[in-house]
Image 1 (cartoon, rainbow, N blue to C red):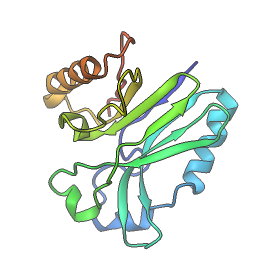
Image 2: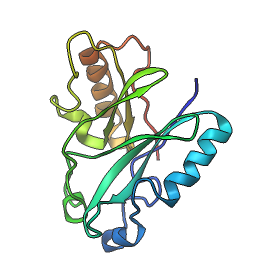
Image 3: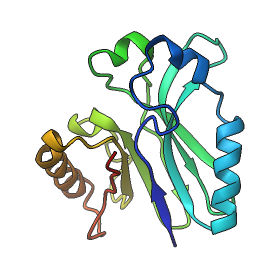
Length: 169
């Protein structure tokens, strides 16, 4: 089973300011459909970051999208803990969903959500899920990020040797 993780805000980058509204799409939408087509072609799971908009066009989220190897949308999740200037462009997400995959339950955290102990808490006793992170990893934070990954793996008691994947921009 193959997985492809890309950084948060893959489709736009971080420095768009007011133009985020121009790039925001609904989920599902054109970008999700395009990436879903590629996921099906290569029979791989894909987790990527994008700017999504709610039913109200001006409400934007820093979103992680999970697509299955059949090209079907498994789900999406809006970053909960926004940092600094992100608060000017995005609204906080409000939940930490768990996605069911062939591989097992998957929890996805965007960026600094991983740094907060309550983020993505186990849904119940005995849960043995896995986690994936969508984060643009800056070199000044590399050691800090690695510590979060190890702590998160210990918290979820993941059996994977590399429980959290990250993408470097």
